[in-house]
Amino acid sequence: MITTLKSISLILFLAVFLPCKSQNTVVKSAKEITTIVDDTTFVNLKDYSSDFVHDMKYATEDNFLKAKVYDCAECYLRLKTVKALILANQKFIKKGYRIKLFDCYRPLDIQKKMWQIVPNPEYVANPAKGSIHNRGGAVDITLVDSNGKELDMGTKFDFFGPEASHYYAGVTEEVKENRKLLKKIMLKKNFISFDSEWWHYNLKSALTDKVANEKWKCE
Ligand SMILES: [Zn+2]
Image 1 (cartoon, rainbow, N blue to C red):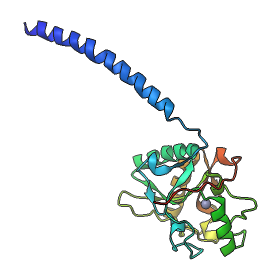
Image 2 (image 1 turned 90 degrees about the horizontal axis):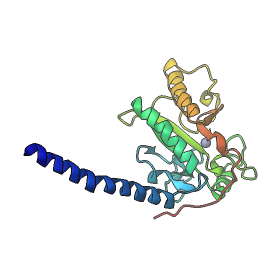
Image 3 (image 1 turned 135 degrees about the horizontal axis):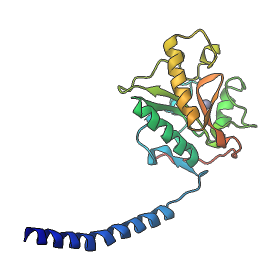
Image 4 (image 1 turned 90 degrees about the vertical axis):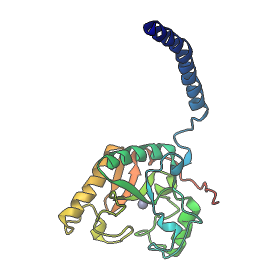
């Protein structure tokens, strides 16, 4: 009797649940289709992942410009940059770290504002040319440990001097290891490093994207 009931239950389960399941799958796919956005669309990283630490320096005065140039702190990037960054962060998380963000996409008007404050191509990209930040394919990042403490990278973010270079030999072994860890995984996830700034990474496929001036809304 118990066996029979079990069999009936199983049949009912198969009859009711399975078609339902497959229907759900179809519905989900349809939903996915309606929400597909182009890889070059600008999106807010927070809408795709909450696994990052945000410390958007240019939305504060705690930066080399000593000026707040963003109205609010958001990390916007092209979708393809977000996807690659999330894959890199997942790798870091497996190792007990996560990415801390200092800067992401930078609208061209903000680049002009920065250039007005510091019109020196050694420190700020000339807006006439634009940078990969203006193209939505660059991030300025470091790594934090499980307590949220930044790993020692030898210099602060936006330190302008040879010490910030990947090739500077005068840093400690620990710093070398930390920079190497950051670089190794970022390169694996299709970013390229920038010799003179350990914190700066460009998505390889973003180099030919257009400079943009789309702005995000501040609540
Ligand atoms: Zn940068």
